[in-house]
Length: 349
Image 1 (cartoon, rainbow, N blue to C red):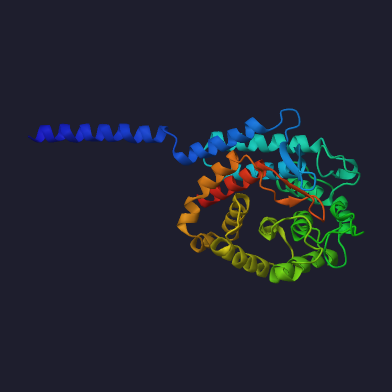
Image 2 (image 1 turned 120 degrees about the horizontal axis):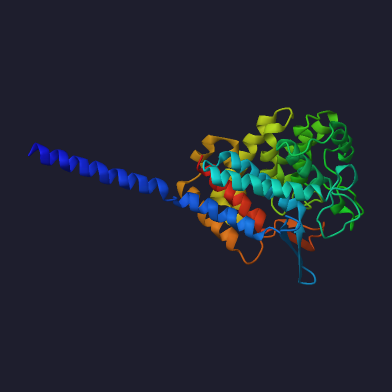
């Protein structure tokens, strides 16, 4: 009887071992989702330019323009580069980082004199875009892809106005202004100065503008400041991205106020699209691990669904405006997908 029991135990242990080994070898659903998303990026990136598409819609003429986006592509690359550190699987880590570096290398080829970039690869605008330039250079510095001389970055403080807003091409008319006070753009420019440790009175003015905006967004609702980002939530995503690098006074106050705004948005804003919902979730996860306690489990469980919807979307979710009057609106499903992938990976940390 004792021999039979020992035999049964050995058989049970053997079958348990087989099941355990099978489970280890079989990719789980999270792995499959990550792999599927990375393949989505690989299959849709332009082989020659290593850039992703963006869609511009002319609301007056009801026409579409498909182009290659430097601004969206560099952000997709940055998300993939960051996630390569968070992903545990070696193949996924390598695939994510290699794709990011391919994008970075391609965008380097589009630089103008003095490391400036135009808005998009195909639009051929006459003036460089400080927003795109700041985003590219900040990402290059953080990822150690390129180290631009600090003196050049310091020279870009000339784009800061006395009220802390930023001069960019997008507000060249119809109102005769050459400046834009969009808080999302200010966050990107401040991000550049912060990662290069450029901090002076003019930079602190940008900090004050952002702090004032976050404290009272409604104050800016109906005036010309609101030019480019169609939603404050995506602009706040930019601020959270820059926050760890900022040298601003009372920096923590900015994060706390944004956390309250974004948490309320998840609970009460019924008009959130996929991109904004993922951007809010990602921002909250970055702010604090405790943020997960403020988000419903149902909302977190839906992130894979948001990611799949972003990859499958037939109509681009427009998240930027191409001019002050918003006759042109822009978006990229690839940036939307990357933000949702970011939210999913962060939710699993």
